Amino acid sequence: SWQLTASLFRQTGTLRTPSVSLVGAFASSLPDLGDPAGLTAGPVDGGTGLELDVPAYSQELHRGEDPHYNGGGEAWCSPASMAMVLAYWQRQRSTAHGPQPADYADVVHADPWVNYAAARTFDWSYRACGNWSFNTAYAGRYGLESFVTRLRSLTEAEQFIRAGIPLVASVTFTASQLTGAGYGTGGHLLVIRGFTPAGDVIVNDPASHLDPSNASVRTVYDRTEFERCWLPPTGGIVYVTRPPDLPLPERTPQPNW
Image (cartoon, rainbow, N blue to C red; front, side):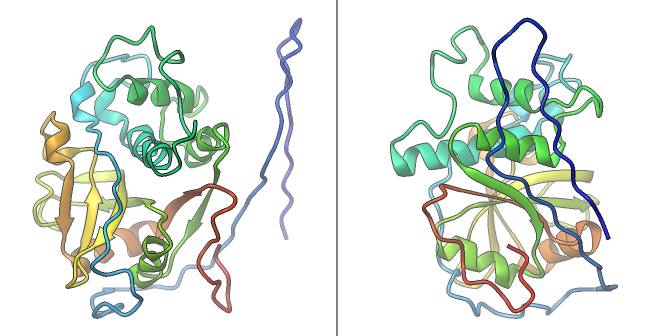
């Protein structure tokens, strides 16, 4: 059994009261997947051949910026990924599903919304910007519903792409395990934005092959290699972020969203 408690705090002497729009939690018993190669062999769920128009932002473009937030931009994979997703929903809905120019007017760096997201997802206890719940809460402040869950395979991820919902995925890999990445990581977040007709994964990787350029962010990773870097290390962790009026894909018999 488990219990979830939400505690709201207001700064002394102010009338700014926090509010809660969503409380979420998930628990899972992860099987030993071993090598997931072939787990989702072939495109089967209608999400292949589809790509969402998610803007591309590089965390590497922010190297050394605002080092008081987890050492600077090289560590901002999570807020950079969430900034991309918010920009996507602003573009799709033409609404304020993200910070507006007046919010980041005092930020002088390139792509200031990435710096803005880093400052507002920084966990002062964890001392980093990668707290999953803080990142989904950041999206929630802009009228989006966002939560963390685990997906069982890229087949399930395809359902979200088909529904028009990009995903932020948590991965871990060495430099030799993910062809084309050009680096290794003990923990990283990137945006799944679509699938090729062959079923390979189209991502916005904010590490951008360690190239400080937005032009290097979009890339394609081999489907099997990606699942090996996503499912066994993290259990298929993703952030799901969408406007509340947009339906989620149909649930499975053992629902995970």
